[in-house]
Each structure stands twice: as structure tokens, then as C-alpha cells.
Length: 408
Image (cartoon, rainbow, N blue to C red):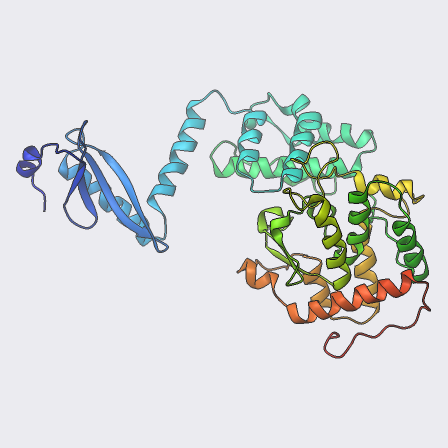
């Protein structure tokens, strides 16, 4: 163990070195500068190191006390490094000018692990609807009445869904502020049922088999850009979310293995997703590969290959084919597939996994989750593609039954 006498004899060497004390405590002697106290530990299997100050400003006795405090945190399941970072963050906020709704909202947004589309929507709601009234108000001065008045303005413009989402965002910011010691309560709590309920609006989608056949034939007759045509043709075969389709990257595809693996960071639910590819889907991608396979994106923007296709491209193409926004949208291919597959008798759980819907409980392993019901889903996706091909050909609409093993 270290002693004060031994500490005074430690001198810098050609490279940094450490001398241990006990229970994870050590002194680090740099080539230049004051010796530094270090506490080495493991948390959840990971090796970590915590700085406890410099010697002689922090004495041996004080360093041991700090080490013991960190060990006590570990015993209670707390990571000392994470705890210190949280304390620094709270302290810096406390020392800063009085935290306003704007400053705390921006801090909250910076800590959200969400898709870029979701982040942009949050920034839009805060910037356009919330900051004008609440942005410069100190957090502790904002009352339920102030929040309600702001939300009623949004409601007055008949933006009922936006008002609902704005209320959710305000509540999320205030709950974060309460945890960080920047507010005492959430003023949105008394506002339950204070706003008009928005009308539930489903994504438009065609579900009648005869009309589906007509839609598929119309798509094949699309006379616009070839890349857009391929996106339209692939959408009903994979029925992923429009953002997941248009931002698809060639590295995600194994065409020989008939599979598309979408990484978690590109998924709405932040869980990796597997899309089995039918032979029809692979055929479309093989043709498209000749045109865009040299680049990053499967469906690059017409203006720049460094960006994916615009989010409005598929919907604009559907309008060009004569389908209004009340009849069919890019998202409507999901409704189309979900409705027909359920009516056709496929396993509801397999359909839900293929739609990448979240479970009520937390996903414990993203890759295990992505591959659930995979054998059943492979069969379902090929049978679905064959079914669509029959509808497109104008085949007779019959009561379709899944092959053995596809149904629940």
C-alpha cells in the first residue's frame, strides 16, 4: 500500500506509470504535470477508471475516502463515472442563467436517440408552436394555464393532432427537468382531456383485391423515372415504412440469400429488422442494381446520388397514376398487406413481426427479435408475392389459403 513517504519519492519517468494502493486505487505519474489519483473498477462487465483528483491537492487519506464513496455507489448498482457526469451536467445547468423552456428543451432534444425524421418533427413543433410563447420563460414560472393557452392557439388553427403532440413534448421536457432538478412539477399533468381529441386518420390504402390488381397494373405502366418505378413495384412486396424503403442501402441486401437486413438505427422502433425477399422482389432489385448498384443508395435522389430519394417521390408518383391522397399513399402499402394477410389467415404474430411493430414489452435482443418467425415469414412473403402477381395478371379472386405451416 502507498504511504505519504512513498508518494513523496515518486518521480516522473520516460513514460506514464501507475503505482497501486488498494481496492482499485492507484496514483498515476505522468511525464509532465501533477500525479493523478485513479480508481479502477468494473461496471456491468466493462473495465472503467475514475479520476479522483491530483496529488498533493488531494491527499492519500482523501483519495481513499473518495474511492470508498465510489465503491459504495457500485455496491448500490450505480456507475460512479455516470453519476459524476450527471452531477456535472446538473451543476452546469444550475450555475448557468435561469434555465428557460427553450434551453431545457434543446438539452432534452440533444439527448433523444430517435430517427432524424422524428427529431426534425420535434424541432418543428418546438420552433413553430412552443418557443414563441414559452421559449424564454423560466421553467419554474410556467404554469398549467400558460401551457394550455399555448396549446389552445394551436387547437384554434384546427391543428388538433399537432396540439396533442405539442402537449406530449412539453410534458416530456418538464419530466426531464424535474429529474435534473430544473423544475418542480409537470404542468401538463392537470391538462388531461383539456384538448379536443383529434380525429383518427388512417393512412390511405387500397385493400379490395380487384382494386389491388388495378393498382399493380397501373404501377407497371408508370412512365416516369426507372428508379421511381422500381420503388413503386417493390413497395407492396416488402411493405416496409416509406422512409425505410427510400433510404435503403445496397450493403443491407443479400440478393443471393434473398434477404434484406435493415440496421436498428434506420428503424422507427430502433430494433434491427429482417425482410425476406421473394423471387419477384429480387428480380426487381437485380434490374435496379445495374443502374444504382455502384452507389450507396438503392433509390438515390435524382439530383444527387449522395442522398436518398425524396420522401415525396412515391406519393407524387401515385398522384401521377391518378390515385388521390385519400385513395393510396406510400404508407398505404403497409395497410394493404396487413389487411389482406390477416384476412387470408396468416399467423398474426408473424405479420406483426414483418411489419416491424413494437411489442408491448421491451425488445431484449434486437437480432433475435428481428429473426422471430423467420421461416414462417419467408414462406409468407413468397406466397404474398405470388398472390399479388396473380391479382396483377387479372386472375380470378379466390379465397386464398396459406400453405401448411403459414397460418397460426
